[in-house]
Length: 425
Image (cartoon, one colour):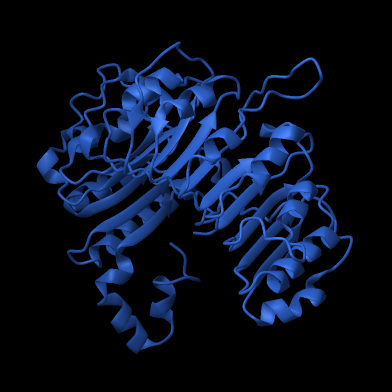
């Protein structure tokens, strides 16, 4: 909701553009609403109420311009007036994303029936559902006939009373609970067995396991993102019991806790055992903290030839990122590791030398015929030592996209209308 971006900006060019923008419904089908923040404006400041009332009216006007098209709505720091303003448009909700709200703000939605949300496809609760003593069994909005994507916290899934059509879900995200409640890998397997149509899945879970569980096949799943509470037996337990014949994208986030052995090394989940099974894998996201030196080398050397995107989060106590880059740097007369690699992303690295990055890029662009590398993004957690961009002009002119940044990225102020959006959005 900003005058410096479309669609509002389009109405400030000239009268003709304004007329066209106001009569083009598709421009008004997506909205990100950031309510006025009390911590910015003051808890008892009348300007907060005035600003909130203004934004509620803008919300109604905006959505009123969207014709009969499906709507995509995301909300941050909103009040009951914002929620009530959305109700008349329920029949056209397609994607809706709620912030963390008290139960009173969601209460108007408890009267929505299945038939009232015929277009609804995804529901997201950023920080989990509010507490509700009577449970969620009667919250029939969750049973929309087209609902295929659901995001909430692990604690919400653990209650077991969400009235979802599990069999038709294609996207499921289980985020970490604000109160630290998580599901065990055993519970997750039971849940996944109810969702045979899943295509995309993101799971937060703790480190406890059971001795046995039947295997679960998700033959349509192409993207799996794991956020373990620790990296002991839980990750192998889960991966051992999942059959994922179509997996193309896999990510394993850094855990909150990892186990340290007597020799000072943390106990890795030996990912190379599983990565080798996924012969369709195209994208891999990992963190160096998950590996010992040995398992790191085994994993990088064992990457399947199908890998197109590799995202590595560097850690100060993990094995060397430079070692991985050296393995991925082609040598004369030796076949390149990951010959299909198109994108390399390295985040929060403190030790990667620019010279090693330059050697990698030059070798991939000159030593692989035809060159497959399309994008390199590196965020270095330090000051610049050597500016290598002048040495990359030839490759950039040929179409290679290169981004090298230093120190933490700029953060938006709390009062920004972009609050709550990811940088790429």
